Image (cartoon, rainbow, N blue to C red; front, side, top):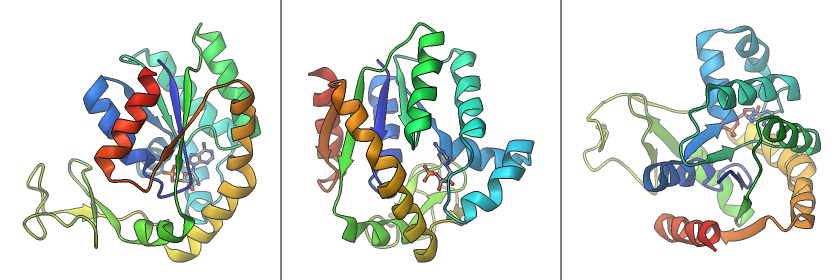
Length: 215
Ligand code: AMP
């Protein structure tokens, strides 16, 4: 089963994708994570993407589609793929259709996480992750049980995304509204969209997504 998790920055796509990976053996393909890895590794794609990402704008369709295509070709797709942060505009919808068709695959569901825009900035500016295992935390909503120590792996190093600032968030939200939200009607016309309330507790959101996948 191949699905897209769609929603604005801070809706919880990454959090929910990790939970689906753990619960169902699916594989998360996050273009944001792939781009951050490319930036860190200093690859040609990463060098091109760095400033664009720091500004909260969209990296070129060619770069992200190449990253996704490579990952699909590696063939380690588990029980299905969760596209997280891709597609983000109409062009990318067509690219994904093509990438899947070329590999004899199809898209089964598009899960839209709906959230109240007012909470997104607070969710985003407070978030941080363990530098070692990637576990997610939040200044207000989820501090490690022992301050400064990761609950999962015991690491004492944490990191924040450089684009999680109030200024960049405004750009990212505007792009979501202007370019990404308009792809929903395309998928609605195909009967693929399931809406899930992303304001509920994390576990409830996961349960609602699972119900949408199984329904
Ligand atoms: P994310 O981790 O999904 O919030 O993505 C972080 C940043 O990576 C975005 O603000 C964009 O600059 C870039 N990015 C991630 N996915 C895409 C995509 N599908 N198309 C273009 N740019 C992307």
